[in-house]
Length: 105
Image (cartoon, rainbow, N blue to C red; front, side, top):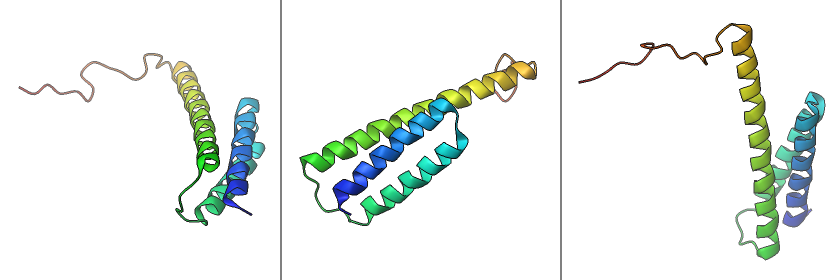
């Protein structure tokens, strides 16, 4: 396996992660994440030798896809938080005047 192959593996697993997040498929998400981590380890095993334009492009694509995954996860977490707040009657987000805030003169 080359660094290029390892980066392509990471990119493919990130696509699988995004699909699993969209489908809310926990088993597929776990599998894709494990595959991504294995791909990252494979990339790391090649060391820090300078990368040519093709490898930099693949690394940038992997970074963009990882950022997309992060956004999906953050949106899902915010939705869960909002639902829990609605269920507990704390729709205000937990803010209460004077709670944890102190004025200093």
